[in-house]
Length: 405
Ligand SMILES: Cc1ncc(COP(=O)(O)O)c(C=O)c1O
Image 1: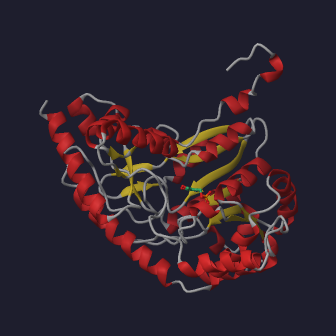
Image 2: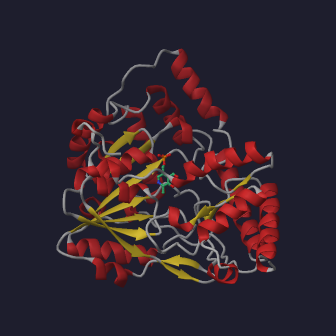
């Protein structure tokens, strides 16, 4: 990438950024489908396979028809900021104010705003791994240092956070701890006592907690505790959330960030420089999403709960797969270390074999920084029960072929 003209050289920071692996697998799968003509069974991408509920679509159409198509205030239309505050307060029994919210085009922009606003050169940011890739990318863009603290895999149960491990990573340079709960890629929910432990560390050490809670509606088992449930959240935390998953609105690009009121104008200055505002008519639809009929969301969550059980049951039948029942989000991240030993393959080789030979898309654990997941694969069960059954059957076939080779 080094150009003959130094003025065209990209910065080291931008050269350190990698893309999102799940998007790369979308094009790989299309390529295999076109080259081999085989059907694809995808557990790849993390987006609900449900249409956006009709009343939300209608609200966007109405806004367009009424000519609500210009720029809006950068932090979001007051109506939406109010609706988000009401929604959060009802769920988490807090007193979030509209002025403590900034609306963003997707949660990804909220992640960027949060980390870019607080992390500077030399800062260390502890990221619980395996992790959603974007956190480390933004930290690197800011010349900060991602410090990964691995969650522990407990066979039969999923992943847990050991707060002692986090404490071990703290230095005088630690600026923030980033968590995501319910968790992509593992489908685990970190328990209230694990979250209490993190909050305690943040309070005692004066470290910022950034919590990405975009899957907060996808809770099938166990208990989810939002950072907004702590009375002093303003002193310790920034919370990120969005509409993509809960309301099946990935392509609409609507998310938000909650932070103490004093921070919002500065974050808004960065936001106006980047994108001016989230799309106006999409924001109107967001109000309807929060205030309107929640039956479609409830039905979708029920379907995901059933799929979580089905996928776990199916994967439990496959030799070398250590499955567990996902408690939240829509992912399962089984360990396959025994299978890798039996076949002599790496996770990536196994994933490529599944795609090339069976048309089944799963993501290698390494797509989720840093190294805690190298012996795991990620399944998104944002796909039909038929695909889950057929896909799992094909994987079982592949595993038996490989073991008996
Ligand atoms: C943990 C997590 N945060 C953020 C996002 C991005 O959300 P959005 O579509 O709102 O940008 C995703 C999407 O997969 C995610 O898994």
